[in-house]
Image (tube, rainbow, N blue to C red; front, side, top):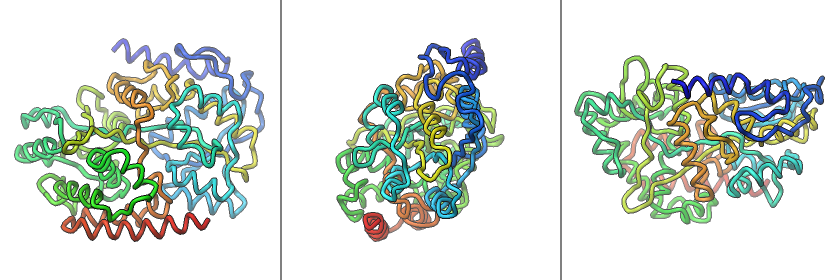
Length: 447
């Protein structure tokens, strides 16, 4: 309790420390955008991003700290999942935001190809070079120019569970994928469905596939498939889909069966495990599950909400898949100076510390003191992400063109929803994925 209270005190004092340019919770002084609290007074930075609910509220605290530091006001606009479409329409309408929090590498690359982005300042790039593993700079760069700062990351190789539910079934956290399915059947036999799968949100299904594929096929093939250097009809893809079908085809393992899974969105899947009346024992998704379990359902992370690493498949290694949101500056924004100052701020560990204290957040910035995280479980997931260094593999669908890997009701999201509905023919699903991928990459390469 004392540690949690001291973290909260640190968080509450943070905005004041930032405004004064002081050291925050053991970190280095903030230098981005001046420090007198007035350098950018009178300017407003419009920031667009996918976040809503608790995530938007927590990010607003980061923006408020930036305002305290520089005097610039901020305005957040939620885009929903179709970031590329929304931002493109705003640019065409002469109402471009200044900063976009881009959740997909493929979208960042598309924005750069369309000449929408401003390269980052030397100050921001220096912070990235100092505070981030090179892999993160690579994901934020296009043709050698750095455009994006990965402010928020995630460890997407975590399976969350209710300890009481697993204890009642006599199940321990599994060490392999086959053990996980066997444990799920035991949980189901005890009277509670094993997994809450958020099939209504297609992106969660891509994450299931990517963890299985990375572990089973290995990092080299993962990278080649992510770049579409091998086809989605490759035997390794069919094998991964076949492995995934063992879960999707067993209605005992799915809360509500396949039909129920397809009607469950991501927040709903977390509620099925951590809500007032648990309807499932486990939910696979990233570390951000913790934020919902804590903020929406009052769960104590590490006590009545815990996780185990996504287990290795067959003879493969345990996967480490990550996602993240990169801040970029649009050329058509009206406040370039203030926008770049915001990115310089977001590249510092002090900016990350604001959200880290609130939960539901990981930073790839290795300069952030792990003590900034509000509980031991989040510190553990953050440490595993930092320790993975350049071995982290970014979410594959987020590296693809948005038409394939990042559009609701289309591409990979839709095809994997169809696969969840009927997982009987992995080869046919692989063929559908290849047809959609080939079209999307061809269109993206044509500009």
